[in-house]
View 1: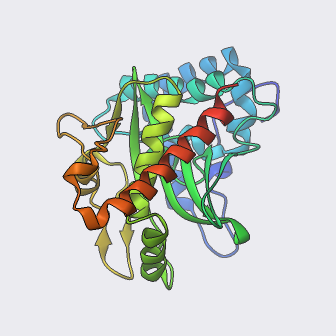
View 2 (view 1 turned 30 degrees about the vertical axis):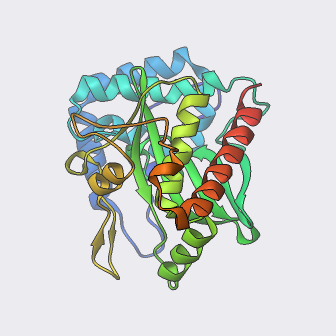
Length: 287
């Protein structure tokens, strides 16, 4: 693939053998899925030809085309819904952030340190594109280490949270406890959801959805703890209402009178932290 044209990704490009490890089975599945959806593959090639700004992204991230013939955002999508969603999602954020001197896939946007040494960034999804092309990340800045990941996509006039994934390494539980304390009692998974609520409003959307557990494309199994991320619990605790998707409130209840007096100081600090993040997001994105 060169920078002036796009052709559907070859199986050997997306699944090359690595050392002695063979990916023949994965290449076979990819070829069969591509053949089954050959009409959509041709339409996608035509779509990219009409939007050549996407060619560098698809060249850099060869797996970004695979969701077209497999899954994207929501297991319930049929072939046409998936095609429409992928085309819309590849375009909406680059077009909205067209003023950037470098696209997100070359330079993530930092919103600064939400707490000391931990920054939130807007980035492309560097992991599973079937769970959305765009992401909010919480990183440990001194080592540029990814700690939490939230991926999202666009659905008509709303944004959809597709993944909220935390750390899975030695000492992760202790780290989450420390982060919760530093965030004034707000657990980091919910910090990511709150950050997404802020981003949704700053980007001009009035609705934010969460993917129901049973329709999430690839629920993460933490092998060492045998723990499955419970998206329904996350969105319910974040104030969401169950339905076709979880509908999340964009404004939080800040009535301190309803909070026990001994916790009010903590909540004031939490609200101030989120207000500071919101202000930085607005200053960064509203160019």
